[in-house]
Length: 286
Image (cartoon, rainbow, N blue to C red; front, top):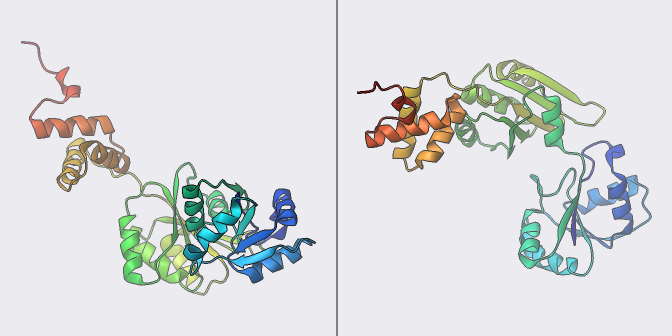
């Protein structure tokens, strides 16, 4: 089978017993960077010296078939430089090829910068979306953030320390200067730090310079305070653009806090000229 191995994101003590046992017994490791893998094996004081093969963004597609064939008869361990393979790291194309070929895939759970940053952010954790790395170019970054302006779930991003100030400035522009944000850096390491505040407050902090591995957690948008009539208009605008009425009603309900059923029935009534079901009971008897 293929074993996706979650590795420490900073603190070696986070290596699980299962990870250590698996690395001590495996024959082949596909690693994002073989040099990093060798350092980990040595740091964990492992005696096993498995064969190492590089698996990164530039060779994963061409290596996938060969590695899947190996995994038919032996265990293949897949490691990224830190955290869980496939999550903003190599491994997705290999897993997809394995699934298509009927080869079993499992994972050794491990530390996650996404979940840790979310947990310590102080922002809602019941629903969230992971958006990976923000684009390098400002125009593309603003476009991505603009599309997320009404996203109601907490959002998690990876970012380079060299671009953290620029990204916070764009978050303030696209989502609002008062949008709540948490920036987590160097998670599980000696200089771990979590800064919390508004986008504008954290921008002022970041402009002085920030180092280390960065995760940005951004609060979701608050529901819009609109009445039912305005909500129905928004639903019908989405329908005019090709969205199904059911889906449009759900989207506007999530963005505004209005009842999805009320939006659906009122929009349907407006399109067909019928009286909404929730108003029929209020009509006078003749």
